[in-house]
Amino acid sequence: MTKTIASKILSLTLLSLAVISANSSLSLWAEEKPAAQRPVQIPDVGSRPNWVIAIHGGAGVKAHDQMTAELAAQYRAVLGKALKAGAHILQDGGDGPKAIEAAIMIMEDSDLFNAGRGAALDSHGNARHDAAIMNGANMDAGAVAGSSRIRNPISAARAVMERTDNVLIAGAGADWFAAEQNLSLADPLYFQTERRRDMLLKKRLKEPGKFAEYEASQAALFGTVGAVVLDRNGNISAGTSTGGRTNKRYGRIGDSPIIGAGTYASNDSCAVSATGHGEYFMRYTVARDICARMEFAGETLEQAAKQVVIKLLKPKGGDGAVIAIDPGGKVVFSMNGTGMYRGVMTSETPARTAIYANETVRENTSE
Image 1 (spheres, rainbow, N blue to C red):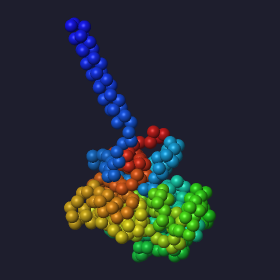
Image 2 (cartoon, rainbow, N blue to C red; image 1 turned 90 degrees about the horizontal axis):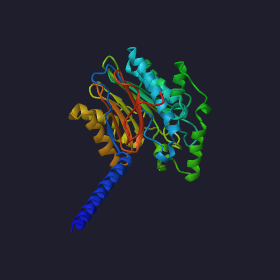
Image 3 (cartoon, helix red, strand yellow; image 1 turned 135 degrees about the vertical axis):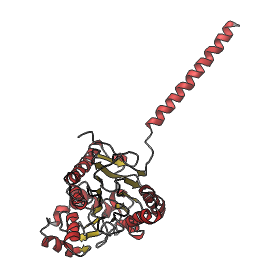
Image 4 (cartoon, rainbow, N blue to C red; image 1 turned 30 degrees about the vertical axis):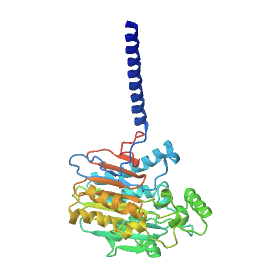
């Protein structure tokens, strides 16, 4: 009898241990699964920052299996360098447009991002750039589109805003304007990097006779760089620069240089820089819509960005993302795809970056 009871107790004990072990294994497995997507993120900017800068390097992130640790570190390094370039201006009391230009120039000079040096090549095999900048303090704006010789298109956009009564100058006119303003120019061959030539050739071989609108790869379509800023004077600004799509139709202009679509800023609401399927961002005036929802519907920055990017654009096929900032310095990253190269830095917090939608911004370990 005693042996029988002892045997039953032993059996129950072993069963309990087995259940505990199984639960432990399940917990461990759950922890090892990829983190859930976080399509709308609000990074910490501190309690009362004097200045804030947030940047993006486009929603066209590489797939996880194509992103090596070394390559990810390179992306994060350039993002960090761009943040610090803009932060340096803000720390010294510079205004938002100047800080935006400094940050975006770093990304334009890198061949990792689809802007400036690393711009995508169109159907004729050339890089043609679009860029815009807007000052939320006075609603001034400037943009260039379809330029082929301007080394840093964001500088030309700022010059249009600050040195002319115009808003948008396009094509050869933009190149002539940059030359007149003594801005840095480059031979078109400077923009034809080996990586971009390979991407164009692969696209042509895969789908001969077709243009970029048929391409399904986000990495090929949605490369753009941008920045939003709150400066020490309490003003917000936005800027965006891009090479458009690989194998885009000759003469095609995207949303980046279109004020209200890919770029917008107003001290009454917010500042936005967008990246994604430009035709949808133009049709739905994405940047302006986010700000208008704040100004006229009383939505928060988070609510407005989520409503437009996640609930409105995504079901229509408008893949992409935005970075946005409000007059209080609150920053929102809103993505309806797998991620966006992005970063943020403030007077109270260090430079932090992220790539995929299932991660939040963090300091670069290599720095």
